[in-house]
Length: 340
Image (cartoon, rainbow, N blue to C red):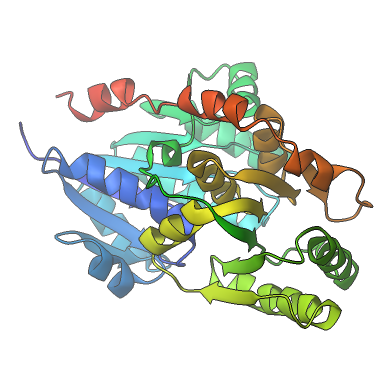
């Protein structure tokens, strides 16, 4: 099979577990066919050290990005939630600009397993609709994104998130509660205090493992939560994990009996590991995932109700059946990348 050149665009190099795990899945798939890979990364040295025999260019060196795409056959944008303006309008424009470069250079552009939206800016909606309509292949990871694109007249494949294809070690559960938190504009001291009180009350005899998936965003909140727990109960066992490898995060979470998580991919790993899982809702993607699996949901602004009772009474057998139905379908993606 002829080797082809791919440029991968996404939230790469920021050492965020979910996006790095998606990148690993993509690189592994493309390497099966010995294709050549260049990753657009905020930390090219880190990205090249993580994956052998790939190239990387810096996120904001536009001329280098244009040069890499010009020499490529395909541009892949994704996965994750790149095309939304909740984080910022600038980030939406950036990822659309990279797609635009691919299109004007007449490359095959693939939108890979993305969550599209929310896009509140009308100009942003227009640009997204226009550019995606010209892409060679579009796949999305949720019904809402699929319906949005359908309303725009854009054909897409509805797939699960590629992280559902991760291998989780089958290990015996320990008396551990894993808590994964991140900073966000609606995160408050009031929520941290209420959450710490509830965790301390519900799990006083369990070890509380607190996970920072992206140090710049998560670590401070995780330490504040640990401090709040220790003030409430000096005897409670706590530890904060930060800057773990993707493999260590997965291995650790596999041991946890309960997982209380904010980040989308932390929830997916918890589901795959068969842990009783509670979702902390900061984004529509988390809410959609939790509703799909009938998980209890905490809101950052609202008072708690019966979520911890629901957590302890979760039907794991039913949850595991739903997880097993999630199998990432590579068929159309492979057909596109292996076509002449």
